[in-house]
Image 1 (cartoon, rainbow, N blue to C red):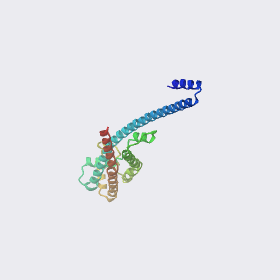
Image 2: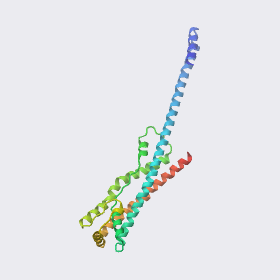
Image 3: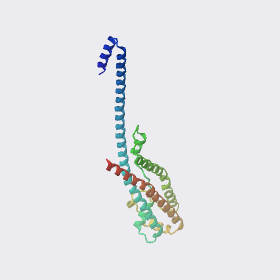
Image 4: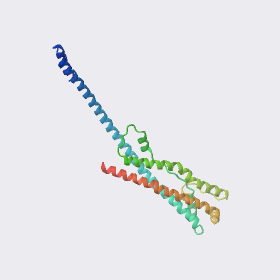
Length: 246
């Protein structure tokens, strides 16, 4: 096409027809500009398609992260509920509790654990280059979830373990064997330990510390259920709707 116009331009120039020569020259320039604009448009379209592809892959990764979080969150919530039940047994039924149950309860309340949320997807989203973000409601829900999860990861190790450490220090001070965190069924106290614990449970000093720990766990459970579990389930609902659209 360019060679064709060049031949016409040369012929017009040789025939000394400047006006027609100018028209063809301008036409050639216009065609070149149009060609450049079309090439840019095609390139932009390809980049946009790649951005959309990258975005969908990131959203898929975040969805997988949230589903894993949901499973781990369920385990954590169940663990906290068991701790609350154990504390209530130690506070209210220490006179009739069996020796094995007492051993398990002590081990359970001394168990410390904090959440470890999966963040590979959100890190990709934050670090992504020119990622097309069009689904505002989903993105807002994602960032809202990770704001709260980040806060929980920061405060839980302190908030969750402080009362346990205080209780462990107290048990050591009064000569009671503190059960370490671990598998509950493997924690066994001898008869002297059980007798010492049952006597200690009668005293207000230990009951006050158990009450503080109980309040701590109640607060943590409420945070999990009202803040994190709610946001997790909301995101899972969003992802389900997105999958149904696709």
